[in-house]
Image 1 (cartoon, helix red, strand yellow):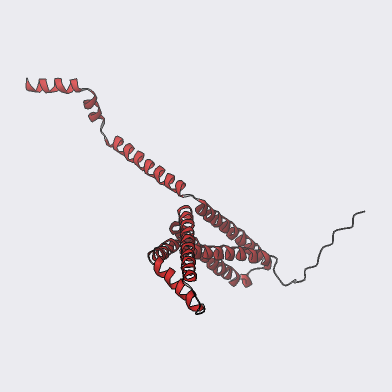
Image 2 (image 1 turned 180 degrees about the vertical axis):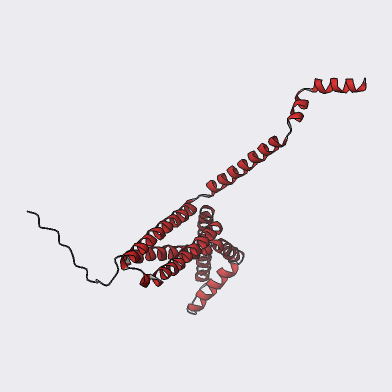
Length: 241
């Protein structure tokens, strides 16, 4: 026979039943806010990464001989006095190889960052993350203040009605947070091509509305006169007579 399910007693009887739901909503909002802040730092770094690496790459490439001479002189100064010309030439070639590897590595990183920037569009993504980070912060502050306002007059009502009001408030705020998260996910997953297509569709709809407005402005008499040129000709002939 199956044993009856054990019901754990409430270890905190004074703790309201909706406290756990409140904590989950708040923690979820804080997670989204922290995630948006993290993306802000990432996109801000990506915006200036390619220009910085291009400057570094150009500086290294323009001063390649000086860097090779610097590395070779440092290596020669560490050697003993019995250094021959062959070892100096070997040290010089090794220094040039090191500089070439540095240029190759910096160039590879620059190309990689350029591809990432072309895909991610850090400037647009930074604006999106900043906007929704502010919205999550505003939601958290309003959530705390509204709950404080509800609890301020809880002494005037019964505990039953107070619990019902707070639970209804938590349900509404949870729905609001879910909609805000869905909007943020849609804004983050929107590709640049989709954004361009949306802009084109908006321009097309605007042009269609302007065409409809122009057609509605034309008078019926103008349409008849333009469609029947013979009528206007006979009218002019009669007036001359």
